[in-house]
Amino acid sequence: MARALMKGQNAALPVAELTVAVRTDAAADIAALLLTSRRQVRSDADFVFFNQPQGPGVRLTGADGELSFSLGAVPADVDAVRVVLTLGDAGDTFGRHGAPSASVRDAAGNPLYEYTIEGLTSESVVIALELYRRGPDWKVRAVGQGYAGGFAALVTDHGVTVDDAPEAAEQPVVRSVPGEERLSADERRRLDLSKREVAKVLLVKQAATERARVVLVIDKTGSMHRLYRDKVVHRVVRRMIPVAVQLDDDGVLEPYLYAKSFLRLPNVTVDQAESWSQTYLHVYGTHGGIDYKPIGAVNSEVPIISEIMSTLRPGDAPTLVLFFTDGGFSDKTKIARLMREAARLPVFWQFVGLGRADYGLLRSLDELDGRVVDNAGFFAVDDIDRIDDAELYSRLLGEFPTWLTAARAAGVLR
Image 1 (spheres, helix red, strand yellow):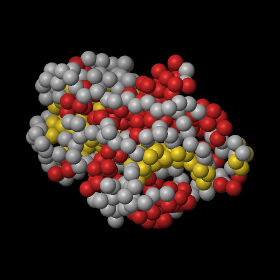
Image 2 (cartoon, helix red, strand yellow):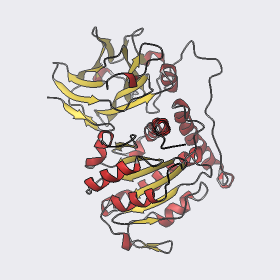
Image 3 (cartoon, helix red, strand yellow):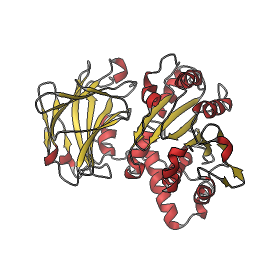
Image 4 (cartoon, one colour):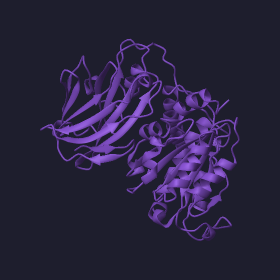
């Protein structure tokens, strides 16, 4: 019996010979992109589709369109293979059809994994699954990320040459905010590269001109101690700054640390990120004149979610909450009730699981009923330092533009 995967979940692939199929009641084609660690093809030969049905270690088979994999034959410089489903009829969208399902089977036909791709609306292309290397082994990740920009946007974003692409394609607009001039040349270069990746995601998702308040919430419980000690959380903050620069008019992050209670910390600005992290990113003690002890070392999400909701009013501009945690959501009934209430407020919650943990309720947020709009997303990462900017921002911002459209249609946003 196949194991069911939730969006963002990953699992080990126990065999090297396998088949991937994606089923839908729409007229659709399956394809594969073989990608380097930079999430780009090496050449157009790494794009497997109906006009080029074979690539290194991957081939298109079957009357219904399936992909057959020989992972041992995939070149060593290919870090991941993305499985893509594309609608064939112009103007068609996945929202008009039932949810597609992706399945993974071994060479003997035995089912390994099944993933139902929920929540698609205006997209005509979706990345269903990603097969990726983890050391000497391979894993599968349930992605379910749509591309409202269409097929050409997807493949060109991954480095494939499209012959009939417009000569002057729209370019991402990279914003700047006060304070960047105080950065070193190397810091500005790194920031500009990251901002460009954020801008590309927003452009592809047709949200390049959107503006939003950006709130950052970070778990400060005892189980997070290693991630603080090893500066993983510091690097998370640094990588969230380009999101704020592209979305927030002032380019600031509004940060909270939470455990049983929470702390509202001073804003993170583009030129003070390193000193801010050194001052405030700690699990225990007194730092920056703030005593961390009263908020505890075990987690309760209800107070921090309630606090952020209290800052919102119907009709406000959008708020994007970037919520990093290593799991342990225990007040599931109360949290579910709050998320239903929050669906009527102008806020989208993007939860990110750090490390290898049991995320429980977070994995089922997409299935939470009783909400006027789907107001939350979740994905987990085993090691965020192994994810490049293109993949991180694509996953981080993949659902936010869809929520913006749905929230406006439902009257949640102006």
